[in-house]
Image 1 (cartoon, helix red, strand yellow):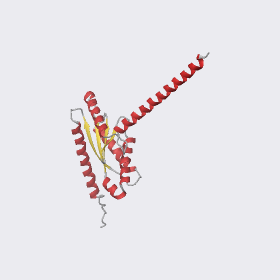
Image 2 (cartoon, rainbow, N blue to C red):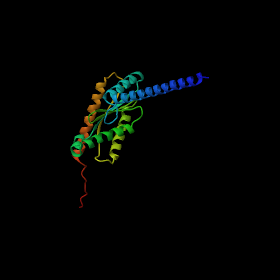
Image 3 (cartoon, rainbow, N blue to C red):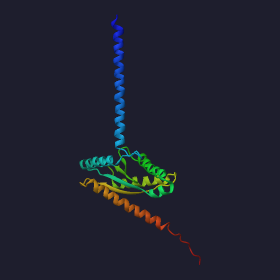
Image 4 (spheres, rainbow, N blue to C red):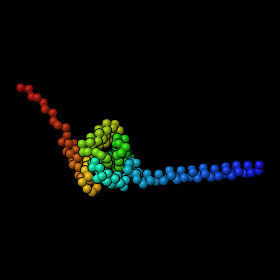
Length: 205
C-alpha cells in the first residue's frame, strides 16, 4: 500500500524528465534547421546563396550526365540598381532586390532553385529544361515585372545557358549565361537609346 504513492511519484518524475528531454531535443532540432537554413540562404532575399547554388548546379550536372535530360540556368541582372539607390535610397534599392527575389520564388517550380548570385545578380536553375522552355520562363518573369505596380518599376536583363550533358564545367556554363546576359543588356540599352519608332504621316497631294 505504501509503495503505490511512491511508485506514482517516481513515474510522474520520470515522465516529466522524458517530456523535458523531448522538448529540448525538439528545440535543438528546430535550432539546427534554422542554422542550416541561414547557412545556405541569402540574408536579404531569403533565396539560396552562392554555395547552395553551386550545390544545385553540381547535382543537376550529375543528373544530366546520368539520364541525358538537359537543364537550364538563367542569370538575371536587376536593371539600374545604382540609379534606384541614388534616387530613392538604399532601403528602396534593397526592396527592389527583394521584389525580384519574390517574383522568382513565387513563379518558379518546386524543383527549381532560385538564388542570389551576388550583388544585383540572381540565378535560376531549371531541371530538365530545354532552351525554348527556358526562354518562356524568362519571358514570364519579364511579364510579371512589367505588371508590378509598385514604384519604382523594375526590369532585368536575362542570360540563358543549357547543359546538355557534354561534360562542360560549371564555370563554363555560368560564363556562357553571363555572356548572354550582357548581350541582352546591350540589346535592351540600344532599344531604350533609340526610342520608339518614328510615326509616318501620309502627305496630302
